[in-house]
Image (cartoon, rainbow, N blue to C red; front, side, top):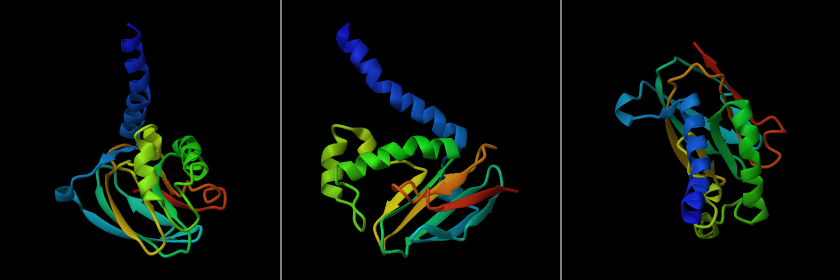
Length: 166
């Protein structure tokens, strides 16, 4: 009985996160991409700082970290960003996330004990300076979204880009 309760308690965060992900859209299929947007991340700002999307549109984001610091591009609501920030702070506390690099070995090892330290979400990419990544995202809801960097201090410094629904 205790084992069943423990398994149930471990699954609650995954179920809650999955339902909140559906609220903001879904991982897109490369075959359905209708637009490609290149986003350059500088130290505490994005270019472009506004992106126009249509509901139902699938966009491939090519994300380049042009700054000297680690940055994140995360598509979510403001409330979801606020909830994600303690996870990012935990990555700093465990010395996984450093100012200018990500300790990927430590991340992989510690993620086995705490999945929030893996930083594997379809709506987000975390990049070291000069790295490039991509996100394919389907904007399948009318939720009010923004792009933000949740590395501690970056959101507060204004590293946010608007997502404008057309």
